[in-house]
Image 1 (tube, rainbow, N blue to C red):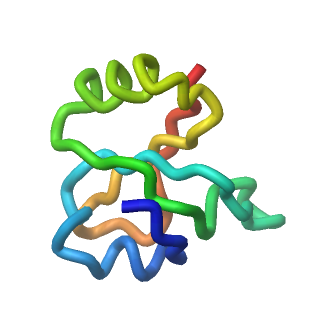
Image 2 (cartoon, rainbow, N blue to C red; image 1 turned 45 degrees about the vertical axis):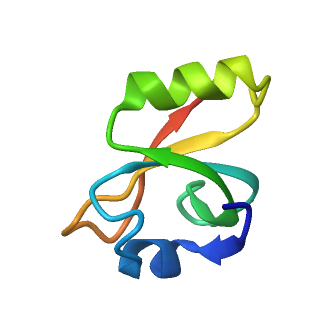
Amino acid sequence: MGSRMSWPEIRQSDDYRGRWVALDDCTYDARTGRPSAGSVVDADDDLVELCNRMRIANSRRCAILFCGVDEEEPAARRHH
């Protein structure tokens, strides 16, 4: 992981579809305020497991998004 990708690229990837994805160094869409690209830090089917790993790794500034199968826009969670 760690590669910078656009949200459409993430959505098209079988590695992330249907999973929670942690992004760092995000670029945000000015219109929606949602992440439009970022560096993929980690991904998991289980949001709690992903958040626990992010907390342990002290990666508290990541945006955590669900990469849904049919959605155009990310469902965002801000990890604190």
